[in-house]
Image 1 (cartoon, rainbow, N blue to C red):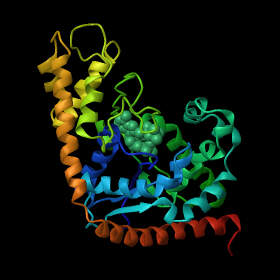
Image 2: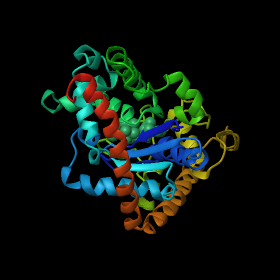
Image 3: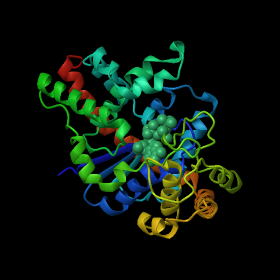
Length: 343
Ligand code: AQP
């Protein structure tokens, strides 16, 4: 019997930050360690998604390999056949299925995607690309090619996951059973539990999430930041004028974020960190503790990066990409037959 597939991807448009690390990478790796006997776990670099918004293309190739190394430094086991890593563009079926699905997707349907509205609002009309507009279709292809049941995504991606379900059902209704329909968002949330909702905030603007495509990067702790740079970012984090430490995400989002980062970086329960700092009338001790914890975290992480053997990583990638091509091409052929492209 084939195992249910859990699939996730992290764009390689920049270095990953501690939000990506704690919110996506570590939960995936924990699952890889605990669920690999019962599930197939697919972790990929969505390199075709990396330039839906502008990037420096001369750095993309290096960034892709760098991000794959981050997966390994974060603890991803390379020796299990139930865990696959791959680069999206090395499996051409992603692009071809996207085109076919594009032709069954409504323009209005894509226009309603709130993330498109958000991401395009900051760009001039000339810089808003068709790629940004229809990337949810590529994301649907990423999921449907491998029959993924569970796809851990943040709140900002739930609309896209719903679209993947809709297009799968639409195609199945029209052409017969072509795709596994991913679980609805509420079932996904129940499956993934608390990790799903975690959102580390930007240190400068703590009401918005930490994002790797942030223009200045001043409020973002990247996994490749030097200890000095990371500590300075923490020490200059925006707080408030309340003058008392409380975990109040509405009134004191900066302080709440620092408490959250401290708990994660130390691997402690948030409640015990809150108990320790609650009521303190200076923010200095909290900031210093966060800076130290982040410096330790990055130091350990960067030391592990140094030890990675790139040849082992490449061998695993090539092995897995051959398997993923075979799986994806099988699904694609069914779709090609259904739409009349193949006999
Ligand atoms: N701030 C965050 N806190 C916790 N988790 C986060 N993730 C992203 N930001 C935070 C999770 O990391 C994964 C990254 O997915 P992505 O690379 O496809 O893009 P994203 O979600 O749009 O992440 P970013 O960092 O905000 O990148 P940009 O700026 O490039 O768009 C996802 O699982 C996400 O939930």
